[in-house]
Length: 129
Ligand SMILES: [Zn+2]
Image: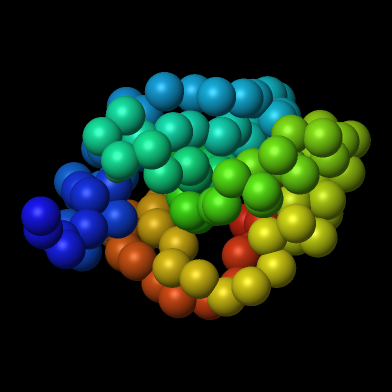
């Protein structure tokens, strides 16, 4: 027995992102070119994650700011998210995932270096077109 967290929840944010990205997609809640929401399940530990991808179109320079967020959710939250109509109302997400928790945040701003880190805060929906 080990109490180490699975790599998907580990402090190594790069390894965690890789693990979450290759985790199996359980449901697509929104699938637009600038706003994608899905639920993934880690094969190794079974943890569910809600992942958000948001992009703003930068018509001037083509350097589109992008944000990717992954948040661990409980089985109960996952079920609520699947029945909420997230594609029609993105704020439905915030009515299900309400408590502060660790989020994996990959911020890729325009004209600045991307940052990938775990942050502890309530979930937010980044700006998107
Ligand atoms: Zn895992």
